[in-house]
Length: 390
Image: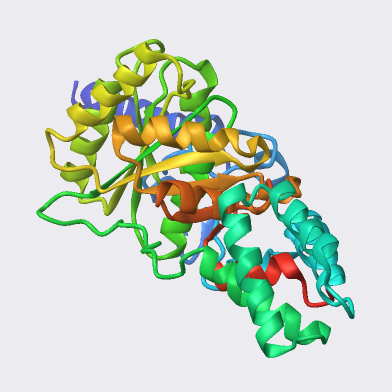
């Protein structure tokens, strides 16, 4: 019996051992072959997270896993207006048409050996044709005749010098031509720009803004011409070129309201000068002129208007005097901007405007370029009219 029990135990041990040997071998066949490296097999390592790296040749055609924020567009570069100092001298070539009358015409007569009555009448006709005006012409010619008689001037250079002095005197160089653009009493200076249709008023407003910025002022535009569809867009474009804000209202809206809001915005933002563009209007339209008066009254709720500039087209000649007279009665014009002076042979209108109205010409337009508006300087203007080679 003992032998039977021992045989059974031995059989069990043999079966268990056989199973122990077979099962590990089966498991090793199911697993991949072990790799050795540094004495540690891969079966003993923790499983690694799948790699996010993609081969370079594949990665080039795939979008980035994390989207990059698109770069913000760069702000357009602002224009840098030309300095105003000496600008009129730089633009003297634009007065070449006027030189035909003032320079070549007058000096050719004045340099004759003998100036008889016919010669003096010819001089008068030339000045009147240049829109100097009858009264101003008579004064200039009378003074020239006296100086030539007393001094016995005969050379071209002597007569030219005397003519220059008389023309400068007729322009009254003592008049104040400075633009009042300095902020005061906690508010900006306010400039109201007025004129008839077609004088180039909105464009002149844009150029005035460039003149002020060139002289170191900050500017805000008020687009109070609400009747012409393109006017607000036009003045806003001028402002964007130099970094100036534009306040505008709905098309056909109340221009006085826009002007009021522009000044208020200028006060809130600490702007130096607010330039208000008004709708063009004919001086004989009573209703429109009354509306212009309203614009000024509403703006003056913030304080007085510092400058009221009248834009005159130099090519209109003596008709500009009537325009100036009516506008002055309505809004108290403080200065004149004479545009399109490069396109006319009638530069003498400057003398006529000042003598007839006592209003100084403060700015002159001598071309279509953005910086072709210059502060008016009587001596430089006359010198440009006469020409160095006259």
